[in-house]
Length: 595
Image 1: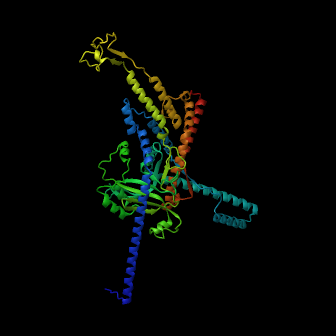
Image 2: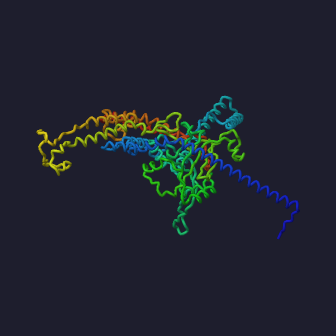
Image 3: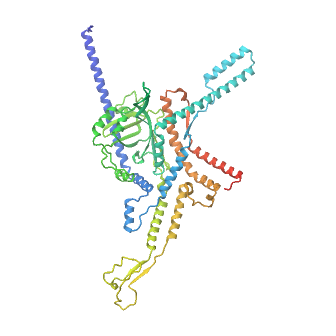
């Protein structure tokens, strides 16, 4: 057994080193606690500002949802019932929303194809080191074989063109492999389900929002072959990238944010379960200790960040807010903070290298517990949120929703339909008037049936008139139907979604032939092309760029890496369909088939 022998001076130095290390750890913990406290306070401050600025927008969102589902507001329904009669709601808006979503889904889900592609960056010339090597090889060959200057120059150009072609082909191959990798990544991330929900929001609300990429720990299951030849389940966990649709009711942009949130903060109001929090504990960037404390505090009774519109929204969406104590609300702030502010709050100088630079940060809190606080790892510094509007309003985060555009036509169609049904009720049979003082007592005048006998007395004034009479109210059904049909056609015009686009046989004369219908569909698709272009630019290309950057940083496959640029194909898909329709028309004309 060996025994370490130290001098008194060495023992003193060791104790002082241990004390310095302990003090340094305590200071680091204090700095970390200070950063966490300041970040939580900043999120709470922004949350109060966002809630105060929210009331008008919440009313718009609820109005859009009611119109999509075919329901009146409580105030409108009460006024209708006070007046009496029908409270029917004609589903003009719901029909247009379903048509728009179906059209978009068809364009972005081509069979056996992707809604995006990757293109290699153009190579204007060979890299300098490659060009120098090529010239050196050409000079060496000329000296060895005694070639003249002209032949040497021709050989140099020939090899240069060959290398350029090889570089271009290599870029094409890498682009195709990267596109396949991104498609697999998006499939595992839940892209198809999230995009379907995103399209629902896009045709319903002023803006639709999607988030990606975020990383979660998910359960996996593999079937491994055992020694006996049978297969045994092997459960496990792995960290996966996820994309998801964000409800417009849960998005709170800064009041000063414009059409693009870059440079502004935005808060997302999460409702999580205990399973969601458990899946975050091992994910990159999350604070496992903070999550454990939040679970310990709120696992039993839950936590709700209540908003005034939650009850009506839950009713419209078919949910219940009763006995939902397992839900835990969280607030996530994404935005930029000045470097000096982060330094003042105690963040280390290793992470904040420039005090005057703006740093994109993401902070998530539950109550007063910070469960995530990190600087945006995206090398481009772009936001993880993507927003598209049915009809964008320049300078505004929230656009104009399809139900809002249809509001006048929908209200007029509803009024005409209610009046039509009420008039049909009045005109469906004769109306009766009765002089009560001339009827014998005990008769029930409200009960009517054929061959009924009314016993009446003589008029006390000596008149010869009848004590009971019948008259037939006029029917205004034709005029009311004309009004309804006219405004229903107006809805076709203002939305660019004509009835014949979703199978109606009420088209004009041109829509009764194949070629005429094709021309009308091509003309009506011009409005939807603008929306498709917005989806391409503000969602598809930006999300694919996120996936591309992630794979360039963390993928182990060198064959997919290269200087590539994402390009969406939604608008191209529509052009290809139009061209296919034109080719079909030309074929019909050549073969002499009637159209």
